[in-house]
Length: 490
Image (cartoon, rainbow, N blue to C red; front, side, top):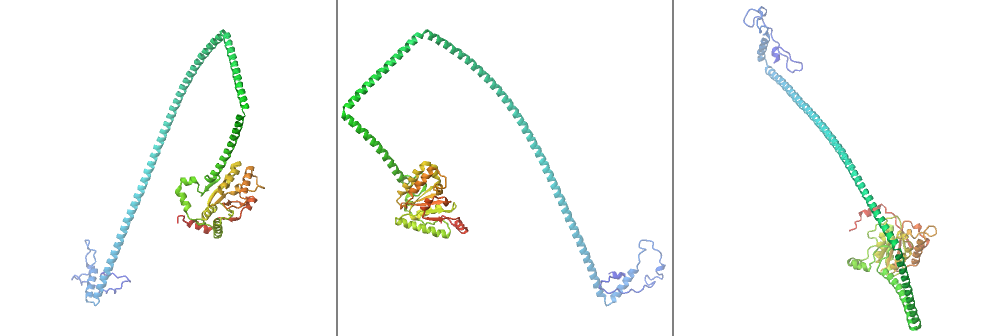
């Protein structure tokens, strides 16, 4: 409504320019003849009020009522008023938002200050607690040191007291021993004087007693010698004159010597037979052969082992495909050899440790229906001169097997090394010669399987006794994967 009071709107307003107000005639208002200039000067606070603006507004209102744009002007005025109100409301809301933001900022600042205060108080409390704890520990350590010093002082005093008591006791004991020794010496001296005096007084009597005892002893010995000679002479004379007694005595002594010699040899032969049949040689560490003692001790396990079916030679053994084909051929040939009671072939298996040589030897024996015995070459060298006897016992025991025996010698290069270049002892050389003597020909009782990590160290005679050599290499990636995936209980 500013236009009513003669205030022009801004250029951006879309309203029409306000109507021009007619000039005011002097004396038109108020019905007086005096004009504005004839009015007296104001004497109160309302004296400076200029009513011309109200007059112009009233006149413009009257003209606006008769104008054809009255409604539009009124609507425009209302819209401008609403716009001003909305602007005021938006400013008020902005102010309220600013106030709320300021309040939240104040709350945040207060919370931050409170948090900092709490942190500072916590830090102060922690520092105070640490200081008090450090003081308490220091006091405790001081108390411990004082207590330790007091204990050491008490201990030192006790040790001094004990040492004094020990010195007094030792002095007392020494004094007692000294007095006892003096008394003993005085007593011995008195006894020696009394004995010497008695011997001097009884010297003639003592010499007579000694002379009588010596004569009596000499007479007794002479009488014993005469009596023994007489008895022996009479007995020998009676024995020589009686030819029947001489013949019987000679025959008895002869029969006694023959009986002792026969019993000794028979006992030795029976002992070796029993050891070969019932016992196990000392060189054999492991065997599947059933003995009488084992059958009596574990009958169920022995019967289950005897009634078990032959196993696959490669069951549980993971090898490369080419090596599997070769060892399977060996297993088939060994089984057919046992069925036909032919001569077994000797095998040498060489390669790094842990590649399955011992396991395959066991599986080969079980697959072929044979017993197996495992011995180690390292056990032969320490036996010294007893090694020859031990080797013969092993082969004698192997020849008594009814099912056939697979003799597996692990680390065979330990005692079967070259005799020409290697420096070996005489006992080990004799043991090697005994081994060569017992393996000079193939046997239908046992099969010899040697295992070694260094086959080039074998004696040339051992190489002549080997019929087939099998190399066991380290498993490759495929065999290792099979080893990982293989489950024994399936």
